[in-house]
Image 1 (cartoon, helix red, strand yellow):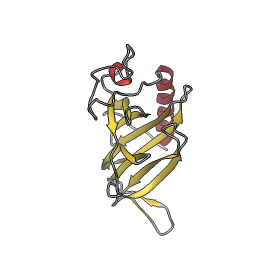
Image 2: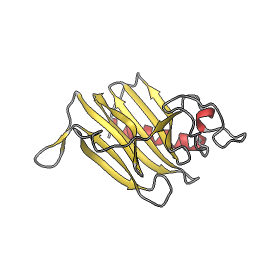
Image 3: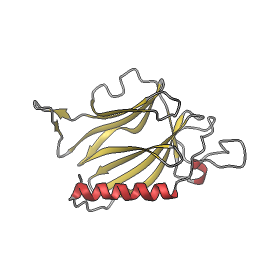
Image 4: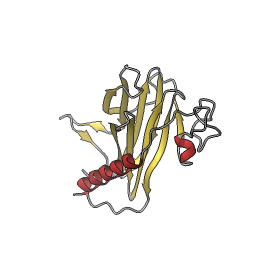
Length: 194
């Protein structure tokens, strides 16, 4: 029941988000990364970017990964899709420090585990969920394409009585992801999750 409720909540949030969603404009490449807000229009004209329209939005810049970022973690899920709309498949990988048992099933600790979610676009990697311990919870993502053909990665972190959902959209012009908070609560009473 708890998983079904969480899945239903996620679906409702996706639908609400898509209903209010407008096509994002690529960020200004001269803007600082991981910062709230912007200093100018991404297109040089009168249009505003998502980060201007939403002061909570942030830019996530890429980094070069030689494999050391998630070296101590295991691949929990990996999926290839053309996130950047350039005709080349990119990769999104969810890592965890949980281990598989002798039957191939995952063994998760009731206390929690480390998770990381990385999008690999071309030669750059982007930490959509930076590597950290998640107590009594998990991290999941939904990859979907909106009606306007924009690819979204919706990342959900459930931790104890807290839930956080963020939307990530790749902006090729800025070579970064726009991160927009969708939902946050630190006082949920989760009944069931699936």
